[in-house]
Image (cartoon, rainbow, N blue to C red):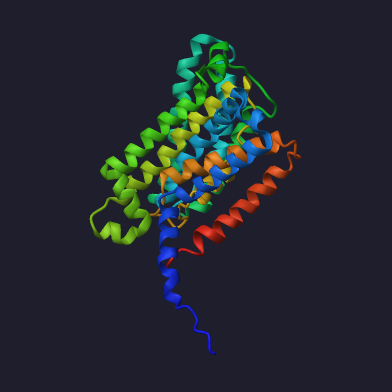
Amino acid sequence: MTSVAAPRGSRAPRLAAFSGLVRRGGAVWVIVLALVLALTFARGTGFWNSGNIAAVLAGAAVLGLVALGQHVVVLGGGIDLSVGSMVTLTSLLTAVLVDGYPIRTVPVIVAMVVLGAAMGLLNGSLVSVARLPPFIVTLGMLYLVSGVALTVSATPAGRVTAALTDFSRATLGPVPAPFLVLVAAVAAVWLLLARTPWGRHLYAVGGDQHAARAAGVRVRPVLLGAYVTSGVLAGLAGVLLAARSAIGSPTAGSGLELSAITAVVIGGTSLLGGRGSLLGTVGGVALLALITNAITLLQLPSTWTDLVRGLIIIAAVAVFVVRRPR
């Protein structure tokens, strides 16, 4: 008896359903839930301890802010490799300029956000006006800003005020104050993307820049806005990082750009632009924060963190990108 093979089209509904789950940002949350269940089974008391939950949420705040900015830039068809060095510079300058004087705190925080916006504006100008490749522009900025940070101080320097340190440790119930900053930033970015013409235009530019321009979209302001948003969030992340560490470091934000890209990729956002979910990126941040916490709880070597992240990136590309319908 000859066996009849199942028609190839029978897989189409399942692939379409999976692709839809990825686009809506739900796939990464399935993995987050599985990891939470695994940690509950392996270290139930230790994992659900209020101190541990607060540590996970606080640890996600800085990465979350940077990943939000990266998400916006990637949606527009670009990439920002300079965010880690921006966080480094603003974190270092926060500590050096405040230097323990309470009266300087607010002006310095405002200055760091403005500095982040200025660096983002420079990136956006080179990409949208000079039409240079985003990868090359932001890679150059990564080295340039890192060099500036080392020029400011090659060793840990400065100190923040007790008020900033207290803020980084403050909680509202079990929720750390820095995490509330991230929640506010997520809400603001969601409003920008979902409720403004600029957000709709950003998706259009990322999907097809030439078609968007032909449809009347002003591409340059859209791209400038994306990079400025990323810079502002990086500046804010630098302030939070300085508050948490209480001292400035010329290497504080090292590697954050790669972690942010990881969060965006495993959240299902297309690196080609024009397609992605903010919910997915937030899920990517949650997953990375949980992985770091899991390695600590399970008393695994800290060197495993990058190994696990690398495996996750490869798995995300294989599952979330290759299997999408073309």
